[in-house]
Image (tube, rainbow, N blue to C red; front, side, top):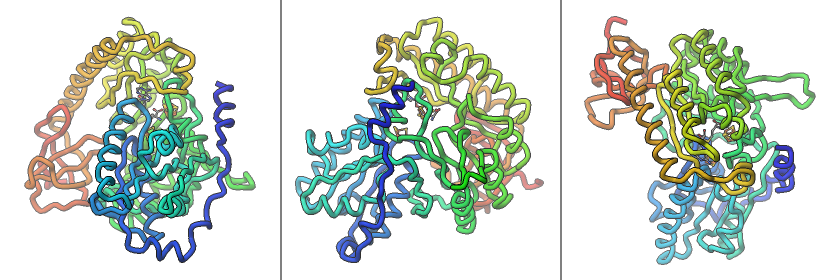
Length: 476
Ligand code: SAH
Ligand code: SF4
Ligand code: F3S
């Protein structure tokens, strides 16, 4: 663990003196009227970062387009979490390079975790992009585009110890105008052995609470009715002022955001089982507008595997946390992440995962088979020794069980009435609207005279494994 941290420091996680350099007027004129297109992969943090990138580019005179054929600058914000995620990005890059053949002036930039992981490789060895920018270097993007346009190699993959983009108002790209994400921290210090994130995102740092609350207020004033606070491990949020006389932890931050307005729902992701506190649970219980829903990735049900994963908790600790959550928040929705086929996973370990799932009955889960990531602790220390067909078979067993539990969980909701924030028209029928209940379940109901952004109470009379279906209850 320690030598990995040291290695991270060796990899030059340095303070990056970014900033002023690109704000000159010549650049502004240069970029005025140009169009950029941005496509995002990976976690919500990446989507949220793309909104910061859009803001930085718009300040330099660029305008966003959703049609990459007309773009002067095509950006792809990438994910390295599993090999498949990287392959998807490679296919997209091949596609963009085909367009570039007929339009050589079009600049292609790769952002995010793959940019950080592969650094100059894209530019020098593979020559499939013009610009490479890591997650902490987005402020330098306009300058890098300018450099690339003059034929220079434009790369900035410096990680920072303090960049949080706190002062940048994100341009909401995927807007329904009702729900928005707010990044509250960056990086991760946890070093789970399977995970590439600490290498691609650098050290954990927390954004100041004032700019977070301000962003929530601004969103509310624009008509947004739900914010999701984002971080790889929100429970370790900790902000201190420079003099270290004042500090704010996650429970306190949650409360401050909840107090913006009782009409603004607050969600958060991701919680870490080893760090989530009673304080957070009590804060959730105290504020009606903090949604009773926790995404609590377990990864495995075997203490032995959890130890190898360096997760910092055992099976019993996890089950104890779930019990505590249900004591304090009896109707709390719970979801998780599960990895099958991690190094050394036996059938018995796998059965432990299935039995933990039985014990908890998650409402929802994201499930993956293990994909070795170069440079991680697991890649260096353990053999990726579970054959792919075994990983896949175990994954399908996990998925099958989860489907059963999701159906069971939804069945329990028949006959109940939920407060739902209307998000959009249903994909299946324009006569229906949909939105989420507190527990993060999607609820579909007839449109009638209701509108996006309103709260409605829906009585559930039908369910599928993925959705609750009902009618707005006029009497509530
Ligand atoms: N910070 C979050 C997870 C971020 S990554 C947390 O700690 O829970 C999202 C999920 O991807 C992880 O929870 C894990 O289930 C999965 N994942 C991460 N690395 C993986 C790998 N190498 N192979 C397969 N799944 C992986
Ligand atoms: Fe990865 Fe673990 Fe950090 Fe989550 S907590 S991002 S799994 S290292
Ligand atoms: Fe992927 Fe990076 Fe997020 S690796 S999951 S985009 S932090």
